[in-house]
Image 1 (spheres, rainbow, N blue to C red):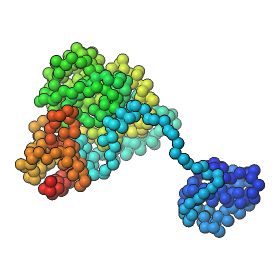
Image 2: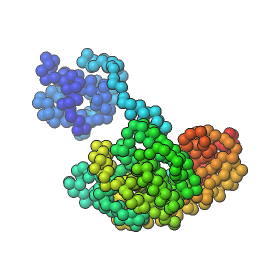
Image 3: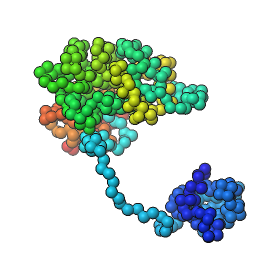
Image 4: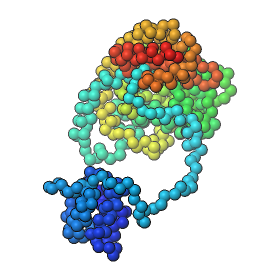
Length: 490
């Protein structure tokens, strides 16, 4: 083991200036380190020659200390290999030099931290590997792992020392340049790579945008229902939320609203969770209303790859003529959740502030992952994967609807006329609270979403949000069978 033994021994009582016999001093320090598990079981002690040289003592002193530890069964001596720590039999150790720990007074956490605790605790969940019917989950098993592995491997084979330094604060330059071409083709978005910031996903992008724009009590207009993590973030920043409903054409424009919201948050391509796709006329109307109010629009282009594949509609960003739209996109829904790669396009006047905040809060994005995604786009693997992804998603959706009605017709009504994304809404016909259904199903490893939890105010719709893309046909039938058995007892 390449431990810093000078440090370990010093912190466990070794002192060259002590009056004790030197070998005994060394033995006691090593024994203490073993008992306190600073030297964990099965770790290898340094060769006697090297430790003697590091400490500036004779080799015979080290050998003698090791021999005593061996006799007392603290270490094993393996011929031709060295000395290894054994599991200590003594469980407790009371040493005179060990600090006695006592509870002290600590400073209080900030008001903002308290606000995050109050509004964001529901996001802290145990991670489950079971993704049956989890909303927003793509069919991860069709992701071309072999292609991705090769792209990442190629990067590491050709990496230069300069590539191992910090990346650009806005994200990998090649990826940002490639994204401008990708967005031009897929979303008719014309922007400069200087306007693009690479993030870890939508929530990260939202965090950056709101932190440079929102002061306490600033007003944000949100759809009702909406993405819970967005509303929780806004509340945590002590913003005042103004809600407006969603109809068949998208967000309802509150024409009589007296307030002037600083931000408008909307998901026009596939409104979450209703699945409504905002009409082009409503998009134009929203931009005009935002201009009148002096508001900035955050366009969360959620699931746009699915909603715009067959019937593309211009994004708010591409329709905007006044530079008042911040566009959010991510790759996590079209690859896999652990990719943790998203992006945002910002108006030129916000670039500097966002870049500085990004630099101070987000230097943890993997350069290798960004390089891999750049190659994935550049070599057209992403476009090919999207085609396969949409085909698999559509096939699974049809099977899910058919199998669902075989089991639950008369108990639930599926909303199937609008949604083109990765989930469906099942409205309960027997008025069982969706929050109860969500909890009961979760105990049997079926992850759903309670529709009512996405609403603000008293008026809420009761139903389950069901992801249909993550499970293959066999799994769909299996978990629907399990769901049927569970719900019979409610």
